[in-house]
Image 1 (tube, rainbow, N blue to C red):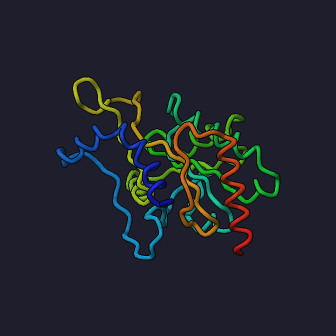
Image 2: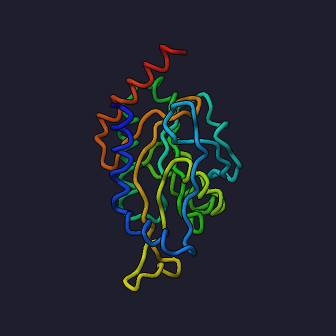
Length: 217
């Protein structure tokens, strides 16, 4: 029952991008996120290995975050509202944790717009006082971003203009699912928070998870 609920939460934000999936299926020239490898362990098919570059220019993989739980959000720095709002919710939830609890969670932003989200651009963005103070920004090549988006089941694409074509130039928006993923200290999927989640409810779920993980270690 819990797994069905999780998949329902994941599926709801996808409704806003159903149109672009239709275009992707009918137009082979469109880029789509790659599918994750199939798992047979019975775990949710979310998450997996990645190699990206952080806001300091260092190459990182999922292994660099072992030992801390991860709150991962896929967005982009030029997003006018949805992304900053989601990161502010994340920050508000983390502020409600005790210092020792907070130290066990790493917030991460993975861009879905690598063309514009360079290392320097991410460095300026994640430093915003409205976001978690230790927010890590990750970017990479278009192929690397497609890979990591695929293993997290994230849908994204450049917005389409009135003529049905992708917006051109540098002034464009990105259509994407807006979900915060909670991964445990071994990089395994735990839970999701849909767009507009209540900070207090998120904080309570994080505390519950940390207690469970602590008792099982």
